[in-house]
Image (tube, rainbow, N blue to C red):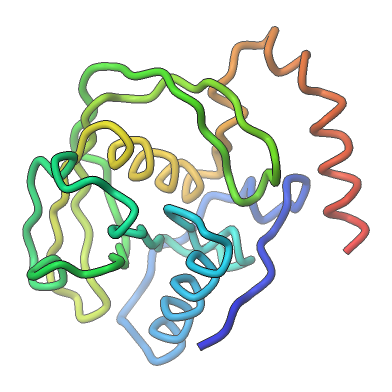
Length: 184
């Protein structure tokens, strides 16, 4: 429907814990469409509702950017066939196993990439926009995306996963991002 502005580090909505989504009203469907359009426009792999200023428990994943072998399990009508994206409503992480460390970025932190350790395997249960159950389990990049976007719903940012030393090292970059986000 529309590409929305992505909220940049420093915007207070990024630190809010998101509220659960009630019944899928038309406004929720429009938000989901906007999230998908915004994610694809920004060439992202995932995008959470708080990143467009909506502190609700919903995020989208660009499934086309994920290698098929990283899908360990997928259940639910919205995952049948080969959909290009997935909308997860009220997701819950029900499994985290192992560890992987790799480069990670975030659309709310333009041009900032850092090595972040996340689980190697993540399983999420959610519903789709019609209230039907979804279960998705992935490894590698898919696990990273599922966990990263879930963090946004909790008000946790990827920089929070860095060591205190690394946070100090990028403090100047973060200050500039915060200032640029407030100038908009």
